Each structure stands twice: as structure tokens, then as C-alpha cells.
Image (cartoon, rainbow, N blue to C red; front, side, top):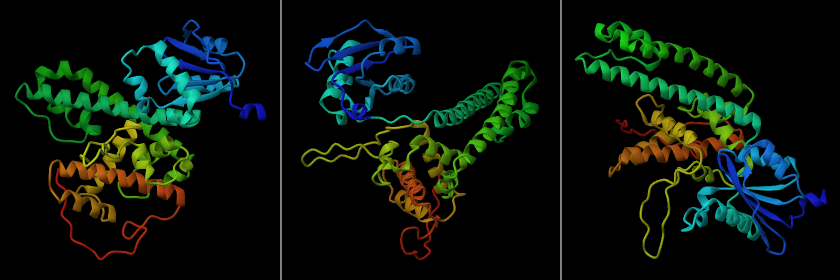
Length: 360
């Protein structure tokens, strides 16, 4: 066990490619060995890395999760680097896979913190999250088909009736002009099939949510549904990974970028780091909270007051700010397990205030 905790003498940088991966072996004496590229398959990775224990550094990406599991199974120490933090690699004037592998090895040898290590979620969490992302893909397909159908009907001088996207194939088929019936029949057939598959996904997500009791705690705020709460839990997975709940806003990329230098401190866009799907769900929840159907809460009041200040893109900025605060709130509820009170949560209740309604 002591040997497993000891830092290996050899550091290996592995730049993962879709088919081939470049490898750079940095010995204890600083000598460099450059083997032939290794195939990015379980068989070839296992064959190459069946060697004495080493510190292997890879970048987070499509293959990093399963590769890191294979390497750990072979007894290696594995560090998964955050590519967004490695400007030394991304902005290298002589960037190529061979130099990337060497830089990963040297950074891993110097200080692991320079790599901003990423922790992958478990296989079960990844599978449940895949169900949610497949649902997202199906919803995107449905939206594109609906928009296309409406556009084509407009080009013939007609308009399809207003309805929700899930009832579109039923409510609008009768209003399709005769000359477009044959052309749009495949689209409406696909929409019917998509609704069946989406219902299956929704049931699968509901079943998955029941396996995580904390989903109910996380989803207490108005506007946060089971889907958003489940994706939030699965994406973060370990609620103790943050020293403070405030760090969650930065983790999901909802914190504004910073470029302070001397007396300069410009207002920049958000970083958009982390999982884009979770960030989109949080912004969608924020949009509901600030919309006409959102219930009164401290979060809603704060967001509406922020939007009421005016300025460029005030409403959009307010939605993003509310999404950031919502992420912090959800994590706080997750950590404490306490009951959420829309008004006066974490402080003395304020007197009722009249606030405007955010318009789209």
C-alpha cells in the first residue's frame, strides 16, 4: 500500500487522439523516450501500459474517462488535466501531438496543480447522465422539425396553429396544405415517434432520480425540475468537492471572466467553463423563475431588481446572475439537507415588496 502512495519515478505524457495517441516517457533522470503512437483502443492501451507503475498524465476529453480507468486498473497513478487551463499547450506556437505529450509529462513532473486535475464521474452516474443528454438530443431534433414544418407552410402563404411542441404532430397535421401533405408526412411521422421515445426517456430519468434521494432536496426551489436537479447532482457527483458553495457558480461557467490589470477592470462575459448542458438547464430554470409563472422568492426579487437597473442586455445578465445564484443555492441545500424557504432563506424574512414582471 505504501508503494501505491509513493510518487512514481517515471512520468508519461499521453496526448489522446481519436485513433492514435502520442506518448512521451520522462525518466527519473530527465531522459526522454518517444515510442510509436499507441492505438486509442482498450486492447492497445492495455498492452502498452502493462509496465512498471508510472505517473500518467492525459487531457480530459472523449476518451479520457475510459482510458483513465484502464490505466488505474493497471496500477498507474493517473492525472487528468483540464485542457481549458493549459494555455501553455493550447497557445503553443509549435503545437503538435508530440510536443503536447512532452508538455503533459513535464507539467506532471513539475507540479500536478498546474494541470488543474479533473475528476471523472462514476460509470453509473455517467450512464444516467447519458440518458438525460439523449433526451436533450431528441428535444433538439423535435424543435428543428417543428420549426422547419412551420417555415415550409409559411412559404405557401399559410400558418400552422399555435401549440406546444409535444402536441404539434396532432394539432397541426390537419392544417397542413394539401400540396405539402406528401412532403411533410415523413417529418410528422418522425415527430410522432420522437414523442414516444421522449416519454420513455422521461420515465427512465424519473427512475434514475429515485436512486438519488438528494435529487428531491436539490430540486426544492421553484423552477428546478427533476431533470435539472438530477443533472446537477450527476455532473458534480461529490458535494464535498467544493470548499464553499459559491465555487459552484465558477465550476459551471456562470462566473464572469476577470482581467484585472492596474486600474483596468472591464466587465467581461461569463467563462462558459464546465458542462454546457447543465449551464443551459440552470439558465432555463432562471428564465422560469423570472418569468410570469415564477413564484415569489428572494431569488426572484433579486433578479427582477437587477434587471430593472437597465443597461445593455440587462434582462439577459439578470437571468445569468440568477442561474449562478441558483447553482449556489442548490449546492447549499444539497450539503445541509435543510428545507428551503423561498422568502427569508438564510436570513431574516423581508417585508413584502412590489416588483415588476420581467418581460421577454
